[in-house]
Each structure stands twice: as C-alpha cells, then as structure tokens.
Image: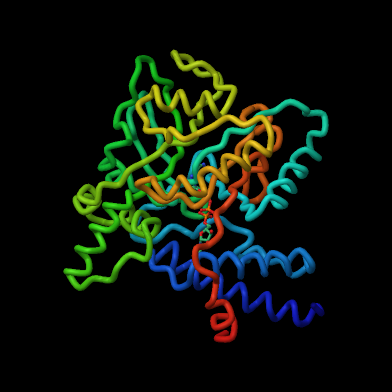
Length: 337
Ligand code: NAD
C-alpha cells in the first residue's frame, strides 16, 4: 500500500480500535465481536510494521488494556501487568519460538508450562505479612483501579495466606472469572429487570469487579485462578526462592489459592500443540470459558533474561482458539468511518 493510503487507513483503524477498546474495557459493553477487533488490530499492526515512521505513542498497538476509570482510585502496579502476544496458528507459534531462541541461541534444553487461558479479567493482589491489602485491575498495565473491597468478596482469594512466616510482601496475579452457570443466571435476572445483558462472561466479570457496591459483587459469585507469584528478592521466611513457573503454581496452591488443575509441562513445541488440540475440544466440558492456551518458558531465570517488549513478555505466548463466528461485520465497520 502506498504511504499516503497507509497513513489514511492507519488513522481510520486507530479511531475504530480506540472507540471499541473504550466500549470494551471502560464501559464493559463491547461494540464489535472479538474476532473483528483482532482482525482490525492485526491490519493496523501489519501497516505499522511496513511503515514504522507512522507509529505514534497513542496507537492501540502501543498499549495494554485501557486507562483506569475515574470512579475508582488509580494505583500504580508495583510490577507492570503485561498482555500476552497472540498466535493464531502453528506457524505463528513456531515463529515466536524462533524469536526467543535468536536471543538465546545457546539454550538447547528448556521446558514450557502450558496453562488454560481463562477468559476473565486480570487481577493484581498484594499481600503484606500474609494479609491481603490490595486488589487492583490491570488497567493500562502500569496504572490499575483499586478494587480491594470487591476482591475481598471472592471466596477463592485468601484474605490471609496459609502457612507460617509469610514474606513481608508478595504479589499474586490471576484471572477473576464468572462460571458459565452464574453468568447465565445474572443475565436472566437482568432480562427480568429490563436491564442490558452482558455480552459474554468476560465482560460480565470485568463489569462486576468494577461495581461500586461490594454487596452486588458478593452476590455475583466471581471465581479466581491464580497463575503468577512474585516474591520479593532475598526475603526471609519459609518460602524458598522460586526457580520455575511450575513451582510458583505449586507454591500458590500451598498458600491457599485456587490454581487451575489442567496445567502441563511440555518439552517440545509439538507437545504444546498437542495440549492445545486436546483442550480445543475438552474445554467445551469446562464450567467456565477459555479462549486459548498459554505457553510459558518454565525457567524464571530465562524469563528474566528475555524480559518484555513494550506490551508482552517474550517468554510467553497465547495460542488462541479461532473465533466461533466469522468476522462478518468487518466490512460494514470499516466502511462506516
Ligand atoms: P488477552 O486476553 O488476549 O491476553 C492477556 C490476558 O490473558 C492476561 O492479561 C490475563 O488476564 C489473561 N490470562 C488468562 N489466563 C492466563 C494464564 N494462564 N496466564 C497468563 N495470563 C492469562 O489480552 P488482552 O490485552 O486482555 O485483550 C485483548 C483481547 O481483548 C483481544 O483478543 C480482543 O479481541 C479483545 N478486545 C475486544 C474488543 C472488542 O471490541 N470486542 C476491544 C478490545 C479488546
């Protein structure tokens, strides 16, 4: 595409994606299907790769999520919350592996931890001396919304960590979600009350977490799976230094968190693909939604070396399931601008 046409299309795409993101993240009321959003996002990414001088800092490709809403206190995350890079097929998964291996060509022995990608809303939990002191949404990854009172209503999140001598401070990341039966019940009640229905369990979970009335949150019975444990460096107490994602998950479990049981350690990318294939059908029997699987390098030392891009960890990737419905509205939406 010629630079002038690309520039015009980039402006259109940014505007579309920004409007959609606001509806999705701030209003919890998506205006377009996720598959449509993903397709437009990829088109923008492709054009920006071809024309890097046209990238601006406010482009949707340059940030995670959305800024915190104003009705909550904004809090800075002690450790940023990143999004995950997406792969939609085997080729993209292999390209990701090649990318991280180019940074560490000497590494020949490694493992991946595969986890289900829970379709909910990320939470950052802070514990001090074993007590939950703060719960926050991801927000834009740097600043989130402080929603501690709402987080305290989630039964799967311990208010006090199990075990003696917890470190003076630790951070837990995980996904709050609504089980499918609860989601259906909430929408039935909303329909009877003449209220707008939630588009899907993910938006219902995000909307519930940002309710101003914690009693409503408690009634909605959110659930939670923890997936990351951040321990402070060289801390006293009984929790030994972590060396792997796998041991972090086990440690989270012993601290009293619910950790998804369907995790698996893989030695090769083919094993990751087998796990993905297996769960692409078995997920239909789960009582909650998943939208893919996540593969993470198991070694925390290697994770630390590879680090992050502006938006993603280089050591993890989300392998997404294809959209159930084809993005039929792309054409319509792009013409509207
Ligand atoms: P994402 O949902 O694709 O992936 C990142 C998130 O996965 C993390 O923040 C975390 O919350 C979650 N996660 C679940 N299980 C996990 C696990 N085991 N380990 C680590 N993380 C796990 O990324 P995103 O930035 O939250 O959202 C992008 C998605 O939102 C896109 O797919 C897009 O379709 C959708 N979106 C849709 C619209 C719309 O208008 N429909 C607008 C904006 C975004």
